[in-house]
Every structure is written in C-alpha cells, then in structure tokens.
Image (cartoon, rainbow, N blue to C red; front, side, top):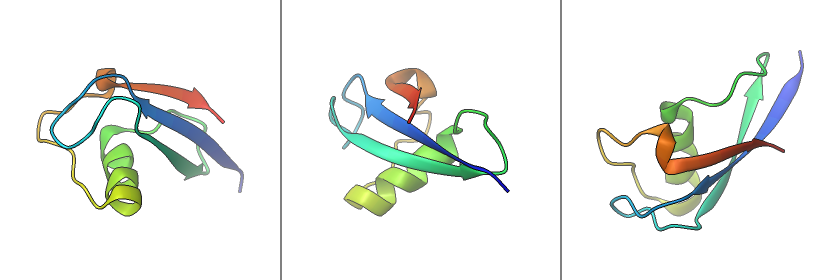
Length: 65
C-alpha cells in the first residue's frame, strides 16, 4: 500500500492557528488531498490545538510533499 505525504501551511489566522504554521499529513492508500479532519488531527498532534468548527481547507495551502 502506497503512502503519500502532504505539506499543509496556514495562509491566515483562524482561532489558535496562526498564519505560517505548518504540519505534514501522511495518507496511506490514497493520493487525494487530506480533508479538514485529517488536517485538524495533524495540528492537534503537532501543536496541541484544535481547529475551530467551520474552519475550511481554504485557510490552508496544501502541497504534495
């Protein structure tokens, strides 16, 4: 099963997420971009913060790593 690395960078301040914060999301078995739940889990794991309800993927720049 293949794994894909995605680099996610905040492009604007949203709640505790500050513009410029970055996380990495590893997806196994799918090369689709990470969804907001996966992005949120990565921010919680790396920084210990949760995304606000209603936070959208448009607040982030997502690139294949």
